Length: 242
Image (cartoon, rainbow, N blue to C red; front, side):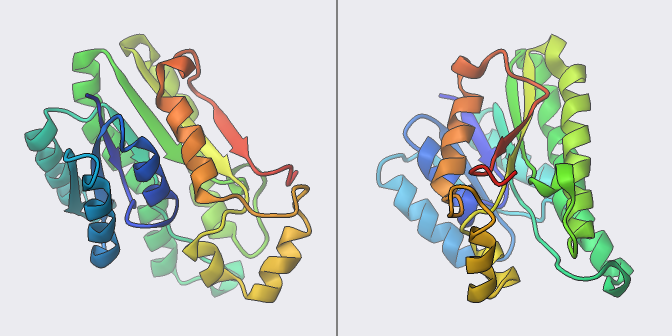
């Protein structure tokens, strides 16, 4: 059975991915602060799959990343599939962003993708197999007013994905990114009021936001053998938002 490590998977899209993959994979849940949510998910998944563990780790810290992979490999042998899902948002004018905030978002959203990928790749090369999925955003391609910092972090993920895919394809490793539009998550509810959310929905052709489960369905396809010829792509799922 293949092993999947999902960063930032205590809730939201990450938790939906873990649920969607639970029947067919060993699952490594990662969390930083949301211990209660992570263990609620752990116990839920273990009702049908005993091969699930939860690991607390700051994915922007190299020592924590190495520890997380060490524990995962001790339990399951190796990590075959890495889902770089952890991320935070920031909504403000560029001139109001403190440099510490800039560094925090870049560390969490972009540097974590580098650190986790770097740690996962050697075993993937050894096995001549691996899949890396990076969670980007529609704003990584188009940018968003008041979200220059978040957009920058996701744009970096897109370029990293395309470059890394070329580097790893000869070793049997595929690298893709998923770029959702608006998704019904805690992050969305924390950034916008209910009235603002209703106004945003009017800009989407489908007149609604995506459900986390719909993003998880795309992940399940992209890590499967059915998607064996897809690599280096930024795959948009946005309900016709643009």
